[in-house]
Image (cartoon, rainbow, N blue to C red; front, side):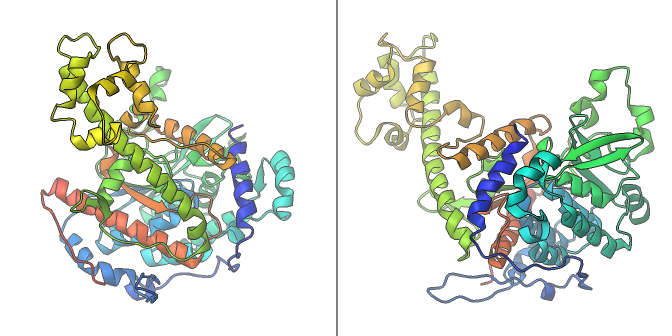
Length: 551
């Protein structure tokens, strides 16, 4: 049933987006080599709010002073990994351009990606500049260029049941082959040829539903497979695109979206499994006599490669691992203790922003309220623990009174939890639900949950999503699966090597975007990259950098 979820979700969204203006159809096979990586080819139109006036600006004219500072530091990255994220992936263009400007991009030799992230990894591995990648993204990413079902929505059910997917994906495959051909002269370039002739390692993650496992396409594992075909397979969103059947050595395998089992392959260059060093060959490393060890993630991808830099995407109302850490990089506290962004990036005046923006704003408003309650509840629980002098795991009224006077639990915390006016007797009465004269752990949880906060959910650094509509239900099902699958391969300190890009109102399946939407995403990617590098410098060099935007 999970295979049907993205398709159903796309159908619902398609009914709404079909009312919007469709972008002009273009031929993605038109050459895009710009001849240089100069900024003059990369100017983006940025709408600034200045009363009723609007002006155009080039992104890197504003960031030039920041880039000059970042160029002074050495960033020891050699591998890049890109998470899947559908059309949100346009934001990668801004981050890639920043890495190019400071000299990091051309030092990288190994690239990995899943789903839409695989397409970006492909472009970077082929040597396309930041300018060219952004140009192709702005030009090519649209529903009309990739959704190639002849019958449109009328053919949805027929194609789904007879071909296991709505769209054949031939246009997508042709576009990917055109990118490879423009860069190398050969549309069917293989992983081995890319490695041997261009000294680049590419890893594309696909989901093999024949073997029911994630498969890592790489010169070490699949040297004779076309890189364009592998990326096409990795982008086969179940239900939306038809799966790809690939015959290898007499056996036919069926492949779908790599993001189904491994959407963020930041781990693939950890350990020995994809290492091309002679000492890490399968003959020397793989001991199949111990089956549990041979396929163990920790055995295959052990360690933590600090030379790997990954990028993740999340929309404003999306539940994501490490989201809090990412947002802390992007915001600072003002004089009143409220979070504000280091860089303002106003939403454009587009149909998509008007439609999705209020939904995201409402979610963030609710989430901020819940986070304030959770923080106050954490302080309250810490104070209760300190005041449980007899250690019986139950709080009596005297211990509650002492907890309310504990310095850990502030007056602001009390106002958030209990309101402006409260008393010890009233609080104790509200919390002691079984009326046994004490407050236990379950009664504490009940008290917090009555304020619409799942306490243990927030302890795990996750958040909640209200399920009120059919769309909410489908989105929550997908996010639930993805978040729990990620726990199989993500490591606790992966945030230290990850750029988190907030795409705000743009969702994974927003296929109909205007130029201003795409430019907004590009800017979001650039901002996230800059703030990550700033945090990296502070952690690894012990230096705090400051900069002034040129406006």
